[in-house]
Length: 90
Image (cartoon, rainbow, N blue to C red; front, side, top):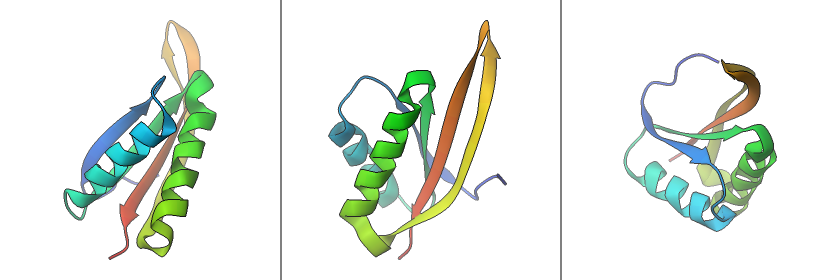
């Protein structure tokens, strides 16, 4: 994935509720024309996808998927991750 022009916020998905992350993402999208990145590691990969799906259902055509990156980080044991980059369309 190429580097987005401006990243407003990187949201690390963890134990909080999906709604908490959706609100945080919406606030990040309102901060300007940049990109919000949802990052889920290990068992939170599917939760990051759930957050994206909830954002899509709430914002509809106003949300643009910029890119998705999957990979693994090696800090001790390798841990898989997903990065979902989104921005407002208008």
